[in-house]
Image (cartoon, rainbow, N blue to C red; front, top):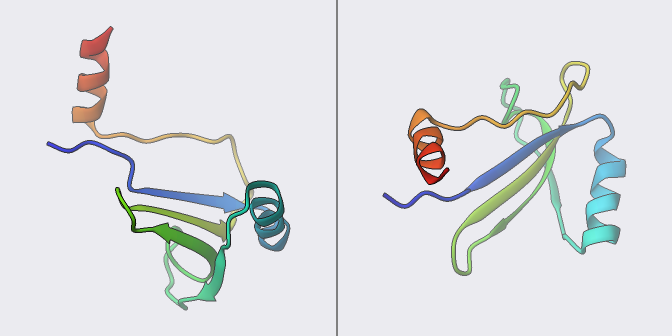
Length: 87
């Protein structure tokens, strides 16, 4: 099974400021849009970029729908078991 990161979706408190940071600080040409979908993670105003050369990766920023909290990472139980087997 091919296990790799395919999408990074971040909620940010200031979308325009974050777009400027990723553009000016990291050189990412984020495309802004609004898909008008009522979904916390993939709906509404956002900025995104996808890399299709080599391994596919999608990166997107969305305005926080609720007060931002501490970042967290979620993985599948298979990924956790594989990581645990390495230690």
